[in-house]
Image (tube, rainbow, N blue to C red; front, side, top):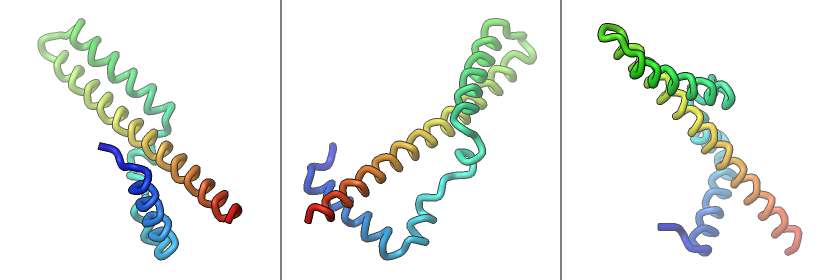
Length: 112
């Protein structure tokens, strides 16, 4: 269930006040996890495809002894890189939304 316009406006005002009152705490809250900082988006995409190919390859060509281990390793790479990519995209979208709301606030203050 989404927020209506009034609730979104109130939430944005609370967020602006939070950043204004304690920027150090705000930056600590928004700190990116270590995995997302270490893996750039293009590398995460390549690892995601490589993990998927490894998993499928292990299933298709699987040896009874080592095939499941290779498939499991490929799946772990796929899940890790997928989550790093998702987090990076989420942070990018969130910062773009914050930037546009800051631009809107600047426009509103100029008009007032």
